[in-house]
Image (cartoon, rainbow, N blue to C red; front, side, top):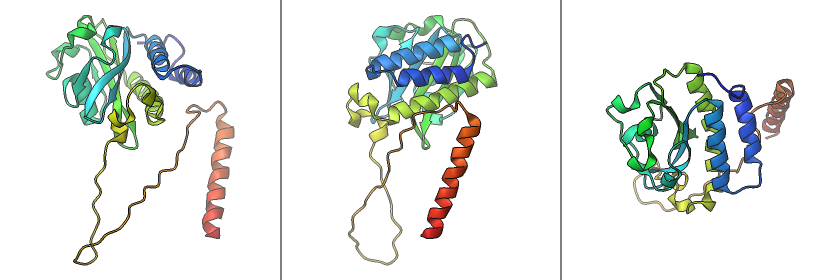
Amino acid sequence: MRSALGGPRLLLRRLREISAEPVSAQARLDKIVVQIAANMVAEVCSVYVLRADQRLELYATEGLNREAVHLTTMHAGEGLVGLIAKSAEPLALSEAQEHPSFSYKPETGEDAYHSFLGVPILRGGNTLGVLVVQNKVRRVYSEEEIEALQTTAMLLAELIASGELQAIEDPRDLALYRPASLRGAPMAEGVGLGHVLLHEPRVVIKQLVAEDMPAELARLEHAIDAMRQSIDEL
């Protein structure tokens, strides 16, 4: 499969432009899957987002039935998409329907597609969803294509983590906001009471692809020098 639009670098640039457009979250996702499908010469591109109840929901698609968006769901571990979410590993198949984990969702109309490539949408070690492309012909996806889709999934991870999808879904329904359980290490026997404060500064990533690599490396060196100076002062 050869990129129709110039490879992953140009794709990421176009996705960055879409991310800056003043459109709704759903319209942004719809444009993103169209761009990915065209760039990777795929008939299908779909984005599944993991909810707090550990179910994966189809949030956007190019190629499958649009009526299935926000209707099709599956448990983590169910089907090929669920398998990717559970293992947090990419999966490339030339004949998806022969895989033992294949689970057919009739409302999507995916029975016409044979080849399947899916990658987890990861951020901070957590799975936020799954990005999938599919083709009607049986084909073997290359390592370069898998890597390109993984890189693209990084941008989608930032979109999900930014909170923009709250406009589509109750934020409490997304896996990003699932409760966490922490265990402390006791220093002595007894009962202790205290307060827990979570510090997670908001870092907004506006550009994932460097247009001028020497300039970006110079900025990185400057930031490292500033950090070292700050540590020395402390």
